[in-house]
Image (cartoon, rainbow, N blue to C red):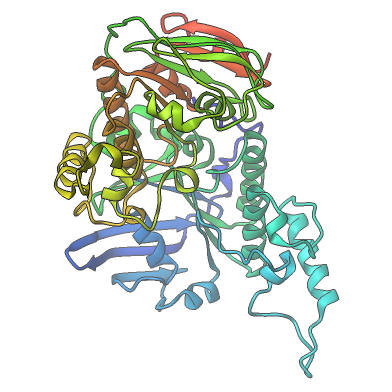
Length: 511
């Protein structure tokens, strides 16, 4: 079970409220791009008062179908709303038919107020054009109360947390009298309590007859919130089933065409001497951290939101100021607060937020991979393009990075391939001894997760020491040789792989 996903105190599923007649029906939908047949005659329908999960690996066709429903893409096929043929040729057509989309990348104007965002482009005015601000603020307050957000409608969106911004997007959908709300990865930036609140809101929306299309990579969420699940693979419909008729194993098999056991390829480790020895490490965010990692070992860190896992990665790398303690890397003591020296001595970090801290979106795949190894790719008169191209192409092949070429902008790759590029950035560097990976599979699909796990296992067998922070219990239990548990910025427990269970780890998380 993913520790970042709470079990709802009240089940969101309530089949008695689900209407039999579809509010949306898509029949034999085709969508082609140059060289790509993105949707191949797929069917999809959504009933009133239902949560219908849409699942599949990256590139399966989920985003394309969402944009068809939202009027962003034209298509071949039939689009019915309430049983009648609808002309949805642009986003405004979808909005006018009560269809609203909350994208993963929120579509709010940061420097406008909540009220201005909710009524953007449709401010209430008198016949003379005077804006009825008092009415707008009053109505906005009603919509915010509806979604459980207690905040002044005049507050600038910029000052809100990500979770509050998502609630503003939902409030905006309600203001549009949406009968269908499409939620694309709605919990990607939410803590457990915020996810619980979202689930309660979904329950209230269902009770009103609102149909919800729910897109998520988190399987536990789907089983907690969805009435039915539709799976796409390679642009084709694999099948639609009631959630209660599925298991985790059968759902994964539908998505990737192989069984759950194939996704966690961890093999028996061959351990060597200590590569990392941390004693009493203390910063403003973590306290008296001590642990060791051996050559060929994968050591995991578990903990709830705010436990200090990400802060520990920053402390290890020297990004946060060390106030006490020591870090020994392969027998050499790392100087405090010096990430460049840590890198040069063989320590690498794959950050939690790859978009913010990992990738350089305006650079190519090649330059994202080679940028920290340019000194090693030099010849007498500068960077050797031949050496750089050979090294990068070797990494692309070794990690099976799916890209048209090394010149492709990294921003155009899927999340899983972006993650592999960041891994390649460190693996291309000579003398790497320790790799710290924070949330190795966040926001990537099941198939890409399996590929990341396979890479990690292979690296460990080649002698790399790996420190892995994760909020996903299955990958901690399935990939780690030992697991440390954190709470309140410190380590509360340590488990060998043979001893660790979901229950013992969660118990230590809340101590």
